[in-house]
Length: 498
Image (cartoon, rainbow, N blue to C red):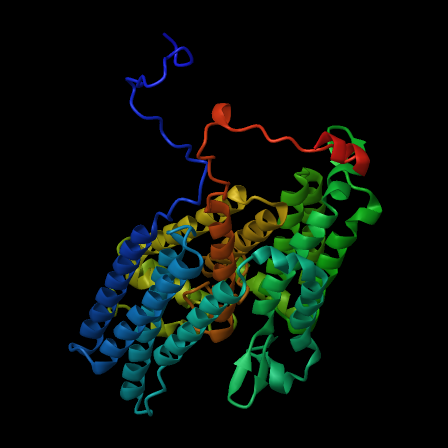
């Protein structure tokens, strides 16, 4: 006997029917306990690393260790609660990866502070001020920004309405330091800063996020044009010359940054992000080949036209040729990596203070010396997990704008890590970029946490179950029939039908 022929009152031996999982309110979020457990693990690793540094450097534990550790715990406990409150469905691996990278960077900055104090004592100089408390203050501001973005931007898709405004703001922030006097914008030969009294800001870090939002909004609006229009040459679809305007503008902006601000890394990062987003939006390899042609041509010209680019290329070709001058930083960084070997010297047991700017540009070399190839590889794996979860968020997003923003933010992080590690290891010319979440600096940390907040918001929207109306309480076969008049009948007919 089939279910349809079963007499009234008969029961189904298979038990009661299961409710439709697609109906009703969204299922409760999963993964928050995983996120909390991973945050506890990140806090344990950070605390143990701080203890190791203190014991190796001072042979005792100072009160500063307790302040740093407790503040770190409080910051990311608050971040976890904010994510649980406003982005409960977000990927549970993103925040722990960010917390671990931030903690390891704080550990190395604290270690370099202790090393600088020891060096000053040997030289008979006054002890320099510590950078770790300031970095912790910047981290606190970054976490507050993350919370504010999650709170005040309940739907990131509203940013697409202001795409052109973001593009204008991003362009202004990108070129503004190059137009200002060197007295308030130049540091170590690069004009990237805006300094007002004791405060300084690197606007290019925030320009990157604004340009990603603009590029995503613009490419969604013009996606069909870029993806279909063009001329076929062989097996490749070439875009029309007038459609190359966005790529040409990005290239000119990158060259302008290189010329005005004397910064190779920012120009390379900016152009690479725009090129990658165009390829993701169009899925046409011709855009990549044309962009690489622009890049190779401009690189050759920059080597001949800009002296600072020529110096970096010469140092890349032979770091020890001018060891006492231009090649000193890179050579010492390579010596430190070689000295660390496979397992490293141990936290606090190396000599990373011999490398100039070890807490900013060359913090990867300092970490490689004391953690070794194994420890540095583990850190790169954490970056790889974070980038992978960002790209997974991009593929799971439910609209093209979200896909492009998530992919742009993830590729930006991947490209920056490649440029930094490649420069420190002499794989490519050194550019002066700082390692994300690791290096000392407030502007980069604030901008990176804003990007993480946007990524968490997109992940929340992508992973949140769709809300569907609940199933009717009365089966459709037993529901009463309701008659309604045709809307096109005159009023008299409606009355008669009633």
